[in-house]
Figure 1: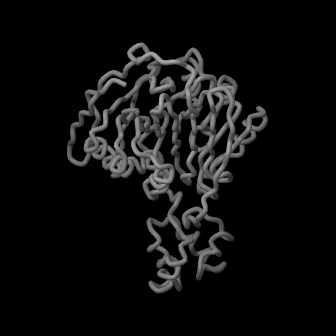
Figure 2 (figure 1 turned 90 degrees about the vertical axis):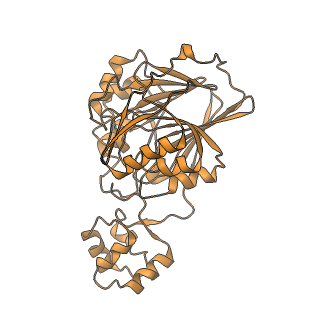
Figure 3 (figure 1 turned 180 degrees about the vertical axis):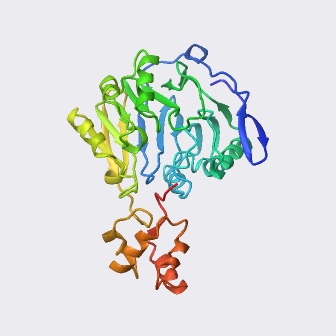
Length: 359
């Protein structure tokens, strides 16, 4: 890839991305063969009520690593998952938009792994998570891009088509950086939190949008996954990322019904854990991995699940739910009868956690 640099103007507590170079098109890239000599592993990481997907593949004994979104800011699960996969460096990190459940662990990941390039939509946020992420991009020395619809990139044997946006207006969710990644005959499509209107725009902006694997927009919300969009993509498999028993009701029943009625295989991180697709470019296999040390997310767990936490019976589980959301486990002392000593017992048990907490 061509190398471009990040220029920032820092005004007070806000950072604004400016003067970004144009992205290289496929014609600017090194020619390649569509047949690879390895395999592609795509990990839809179980990151609770957040998004993170890892691509790993190789060609001519060179390994490539791409990450689409980086999980929630209140957890370190994505960074830990990367460590479990023996990641040494990252070729590209794509951030769909600046919400804390998509950009959340970018700073920590950049501090942990040498990263060649970071892509964002260009939309901004005043959140500390976003500010911290931008500072980490600068400090890392990674190249920075704001790709736009119609641009194409090649990274080894994998091609990336930018499907959206054409321009940005400050609508961060709607203008999520949407991409299709192609590995020989297998195609993977991601739209971040883009809504139905934006999905329809993608249909008019792109000659082709078909894909074998579709990550459902906005965690399976009914604000995304328009019927005509699903028909045009025509995926074999749909995958959503959502926290178990999350407060948003994701994935919404309408979305699930739409996918199942279309005869599309459906997987979700809330039920299946991390979903791994392995392909040689023509055929694929799907496996799932549930976390060995599942915790109970106090902001989202059900009344019954909460009672598995030490000192939390039915009455306290009800009180815990009534006092949501919590910013940390220490906030549990707000519940009547939970003293500092009781809190220490809860922490020592190790079941209660903040995974998948509200943004």
